[in-house]
Length: 116
Image 1: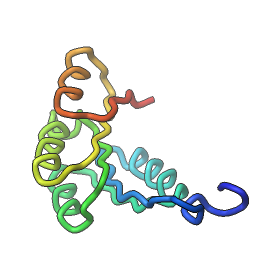
Image 2: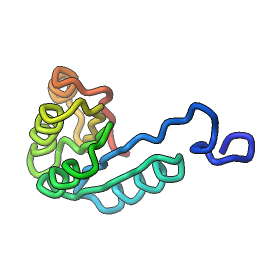
Image 3: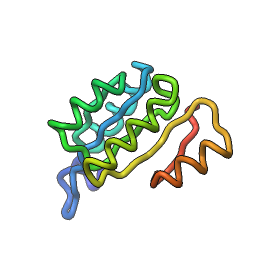
């Protein structure tokens, strides 16, 4: 909230279409709640195929993707989303490593976050 109004009602605010892809239902629900409360349009998916189907209709501007999804399928999904559209990419991981972080950034990740 800013000045008593939801953020989405402030001057110059842009609602971003965000796709959250994680195999953990709790993580998806938490991100969805945070992003929706902030005034963004949030879609969630628990698997690569579901995410691709949603991306076709939702045209996300940003994707938050668990790189550990489906044994590395998160990186594959990110490549496919980037190839289809110019999508901002934020990667989540449960097992951070220097090599994985470098790989994510080389793929064009805007950020690489460790899940708590």
